[in-house]
Length: 107
Image (tube, helix red, strand yellow):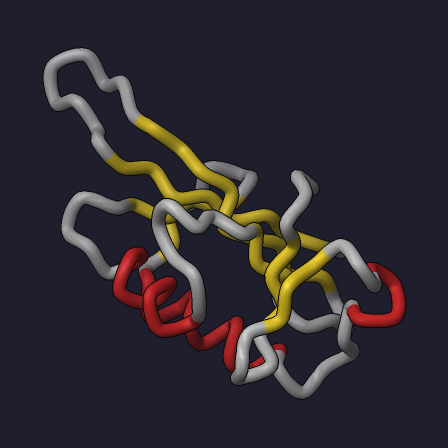
């Protein structure tokens, strides 16, 4: 089982329009796999800052709103699980703290 997470921002209060980016995916037994979004974040620190912005709302693929603290907690707990390194070698970046970022689109 896996769940994708998305950030919505730039939400228009009048028409409901918003921008959305894929944050990443959490799969049972695996580390959280981040989607590389260098315009918004480049590591876990700037990721945490981004998702905690007042104008950013996080949703899972089932449209359930997720609080930033909850997502960061899930990500932290997944860090001891299986790495994507052997499965995705050459397709992802890995920052200095071992968080895995996928450069290509995925879901």
